[in-house]
Length: 132
Image (cartoon, rainbow, N blue to C red; front, top):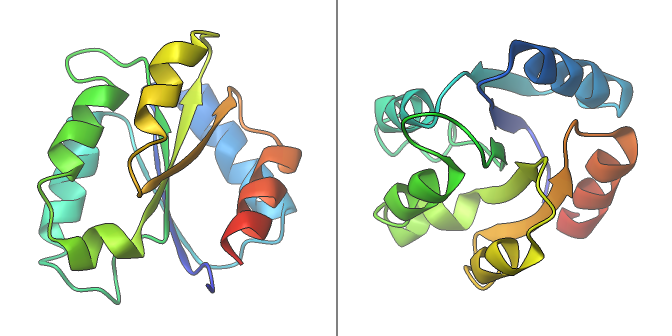
């Protein structure tokens, strides 16, 4: 899979900046979109009108956010069509070490992995290799 579009959803501006820098240092040259809430991320995806050519290949998703957390986002994401869910791979980002909660989401075909925050070059390279 060629990774051309990435969406990063995180309520922390510093973590969004770090993600942008890490993705750039990892050689990502595609379209990067950042959103500061799960709801804004879902609104963005809905605005794409199911256009597969615009749909993100990877969604880096913070778990701990106010109003709607990453788990709520995943529940809403499940309502999208199979065509769309097959295009995107969600990578959960967390500052928590509650592995049990995270593992329950890994059984969803579109949730590929999870990594500690802030995202690192090693994490990005790992997910790029996994999806290539």
